[in-house]
Image (cartoon, rainbow, N blue to C red):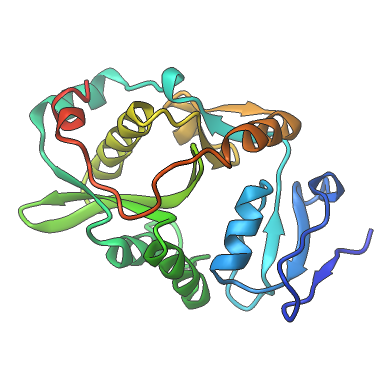
Length: 238
């Protein structure tokens, strides 16, 4: 099957996700543009970009889909001990660009990154519009971990996280999930399976089921703009 090419000179348009390839799993199309309009359109249809430097823009919609239902979120005992110590100050949307830099930095297992300059620019645009958000973990005034993603109605699409200190990104993630739960978000999209996410209670669901959630909740009226962490969530995160 020939992979569809998306014309970057035309308005955002994607083929039905049922046409995504089985190998590689979920690859749907290539081309188009990386900007706020294309990204919002893709997320609303259960599609996300993922490609390496030097490759064309690749768009994916895997089946099954890895998700977290906030009410099923799990916190391991060891992480609860860390949370009780409150070693980090947690903020929302205070340092979006710096979180992107942290997520794009080389890891101890690879020097490669899929967060290209083009990707950063596109998500920065989404952040400025109030759709993309970051969670930051600070220690002694320094950014030591965090994560970012995109809010579509009452669904949060997680993208990437990083940690420079043990448990920093995990603690940031816990605060995010608790806040989303308080704001009555229905689902956190984790895209594809990982043992790390499964340890938090993430589970795989059929793509059809995921799309049903999108149809129901992606258009929910939610405030658009920069987020702040509610104090009561800080105090009752456990």
